[in-house]
Image (cartoon, rainbow, N blue to C red; front, side):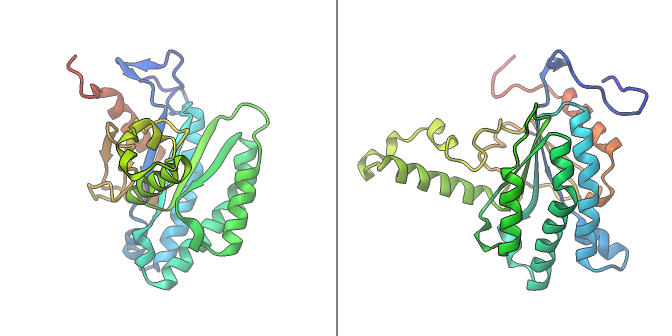
Length: 253
């Protein structure tokens, strides 16, 4: 994979490298913030704020590498069971990100969307999310940034089915008529392609209820590096690993 003089990977013009489809959708589980803080005798919120700092460089790198879709799993439904003070800190970190990066995202032609059951979020946070989501990208959108917050794969499939049945008013005897395409059209990720590559930082080797439907044939890359220490060089390494894979999608080639 070619790199330019800045050390970053060049964009792909033909859409294919080593026979694999172009990496169109990168998903990342941002894990390890709390352990990063603990290793430095800091409180857990300090790790979350440090993790936010790492997102800015990631966004710039994805734009530079012409990856059109980036989804970040920052807060799961199960995380809501953590101590109240940490939940409050997570909300504050999210607000901080919007305050610090909102105008920068628009300036760099990055669209912003939050998926998840955010009804329990503080009113101020929900208002800031709505304002940033409502900002229009006037020219070409260089990156579609999706933040999965208070999200889980099981919740996503449940709300998709509930939404579909409510919309179509399907009788119980006709439920079997519901197909994959109809469910996909009601997922929180509708409009996004399925991820090509999922990166999970922090050493855990599981997907933790993230995009259970959408990750069916995603390549999974696990690293022991804690999210605040995940460098752009390691991002490039993960992407090079992706292009070394032979993606068959269940077909013998």
